[in-house]
Length: 414
Image (cartoon, rainbow, N blue to C red):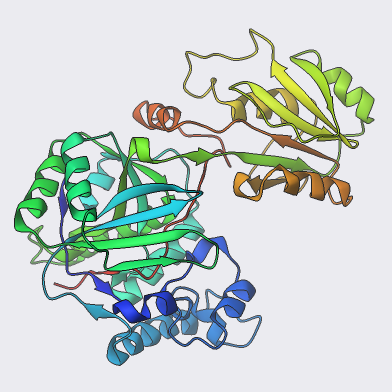
């Protein structure tokens, strides 16, 4: 893998909590407007600039993209964002529930994405790609990072330990309760070691941010084609990523709620489930899946354990082994006639960060009729799928905490 250090654009230490924000795609325009209220330094003014227009303004209107550029330049002019004088790598750590994961902020090589050395496990939508491509083009910068994983590396672990033994440049807890810690890698030897160790890797993996990855790489590739004097050394040949060792990351569950039982009564639905699952009524107390191929169902005020019967799944198949595949085929499709998870209006998805209490709430409210909780996918499963060129079914992985935006920006200008 080819990576490089870069001259990061980032807020002064005393402004970081004012600037930093959640990623653009985890909240809507109204939520961003509320979070940024009274704070002209919030990165939402760059990544969701529709908040500076009247409510209801189309976020894809050309004037909205123009506003992003204006705001970005304003941030730089006001000193709310400042570019480092020298090229660095950076260490970015996140703490959730007492557990900290450490990533290395890199310039990832566009060609590694185009040749599939940077591996993906999800499909992307062209409309979402194009939106982020416009944002990268007009700003000539990767405003937000993408989230990568790599196989554990002892040498890089040692560098991370050495760098993080020093006082962090940024160290704060965001309003959501997650801790964010950030160090600048200035030592020339450590910078060389990081470059050399990534060069030994055959691949990296997109953990989260497939649309941002595609957009960033495609704009870089576009610039290379459009530049008659292209050499391959230009800054646009790289894009902003935070890469974490595999063992640092934890995927949490991604659950389902459905609006109807396809004309079945609750007892008829349970009866049909018994063909492919061992069904146990667990009563009123919330029941969490305990292992792979064990599911939790909330229906009619009761929790059930569903254990897939032997022969209903294929553990030798990287897709067939997934609980999202088993539940999609044997429950959502076969019984409920929900064929396409991307388009069906009869199903919704709930990230595990909200807890199974949220599933119960949505069913008890009458909004939904049943909820299905899945055992989380493992990083090994994700990597196996990417290595075999397969694509995960929709809504399979949920990573938390999300990367905080605004800690570091990568300019595509040389």
